[in-house]
Each structure stands twice: as C-alpha cells, then as structure tokens.
Image (cartoon, rainbow, N blue to C red; front, side, top):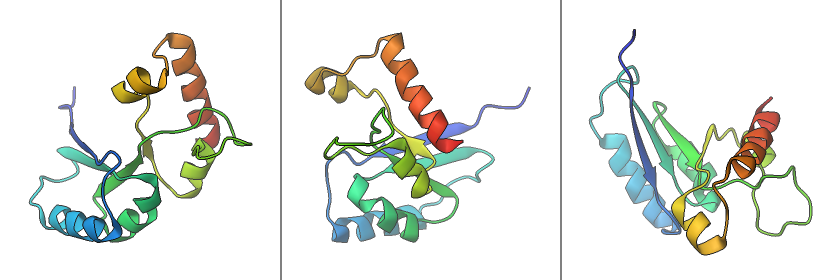
Length: 125
C-alpha cells in the first residue's frame, strides 16, 4: 500500500487585495516544499482573485474555490456555480465549512451533501 500523501490547504477567507495576492503568492512560490509525490498544496483565495492566483502560482500548487452553488446557475446573485469553476479550471472547492453552517444556516446533513456532490460531479464531467 502506498504511503498517504500529505495535503496542505490554505483558505484566505474574505481577505486581501490584488497587491496582497502578489505578496502572498511570491512567498508561496519561494517556499521550499517537498515534491508533489509527498505533499499536495492547495490555496483558496477569494473568488475574485482565482484567475490572478492561478496565473502567478507555481505549477506544483493548486487553487481551490471557497464555496460553490449547488445548482447549475440562474437568478442567484453572487453565487458561483460548479460549472463556472470548471470553466476557470479550478480543480478544488471547499464545501460545507463551519462558518457556512453556523452563520448562513447551511446544513451538513447527508441529503445536502449529496446535492453538492452531484452538482460538482456533473459540472466536471
């Protein structure tokens, strides 16, 4: 059985500016990190900075969205669909994090989780 790869994720929450992004990505790009065979590094900037971070970040690191709307699209102002993330070639998304459950009333019950999984899988197909 192969050794399990370490996963390191950094969620920037609702913080930063374009200038902050440049500084943070510079620090990340200069970091000494074991090879991709040993560790997977994923950073999660606010949605508005995803393209900028993708363009600046070293190729052995990935980006993640901080959330994802559970439906295909429509009149849901401010939401980001899985289809949009796929279009941006964002391979990861953080789903069901604690502040979404505590502050926004989202659920972690299995039915809600299944809806989210279904939306993300359909969009990536």
